[in-house]
Length: 397
Image (cartoon, rainbow, N blue to C red; front, side):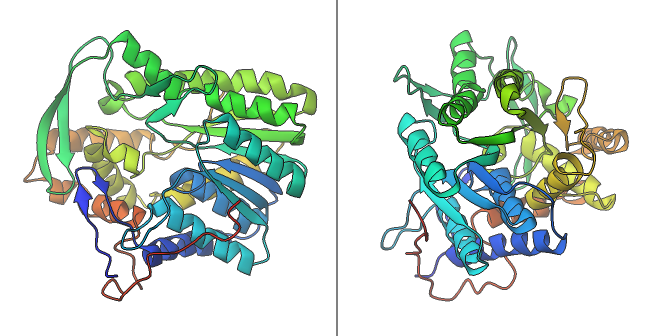
């Protein structure tokens, strides 16, 4: 079939298998070109099919030659219907890993469930024995708690007062004002249930009980802080409460891992175009201005550049100490939060409107990155060619 992008609001309903493969191969090539990492050897990535999770799996496998188990929840293809992009990403990763002689197996299912946790642990025990790195990179709007059976849905709302500011429809380039009403206490509770640290801790407890963690094992989850202009709807909103919980949970997990000389960290990463960030008001406009500024300063990074730097300059260096901020977090958002970068964005924010954004922002870069998430807009791909949508994943358990 001829596969074209089909949009509905902030989501693309189709994905291109060849484009997704090309995107993955580009990330693999980048990682290989950086040289070998004296890093982990057996890695579990929870949320391994897109974004930072996929980049973490690629960096582990093709930077450190690590065996990886990836867990994700993606929709497979059917005749005349494409799979979700994470499915095609994982198929491409698996294909290249097997070609390179690198162990890689994947599990597709609800990572929040006890069933998938036990299935994953059984695979680890059978094939790897233990893992020395666990990456937790889930980004789901819904979670059913396996202990209570209650389904929780996260919301993107400010706390305490109505929020109004600029945003942009990145499809049209129209800058407008958006107003979001404040959340309820129930909204906060639900968002923390979905996006906080409880499930991360459940995973680590299950791995610990199964003796599936190596001595000195490390676990890492990803977070975001961002600038003042987004904090009302992000860091000081419902999502921020969830991130606070996630970061606090890192200390609880670190205590739990002490007897195996292990540790747990949260890495605060840079703002990037993801399916989730595209749906958050204000964030697309901020990212457009951020991209323009960081590209001009030659310090722009995508997911794979960010995670390679995290592994090479923070997690696995000759120094035994991982540099942390005053709250005990790894800060790989350091270039984004540089004073000169943020001062420039503050200046541009005041100027930003529909007529100026094409000059002062990088809306084209935003659109390009968004389309790339779904396998569209990649150089070297013939999008007019008849394409087999029915791609399967090798070594899917």
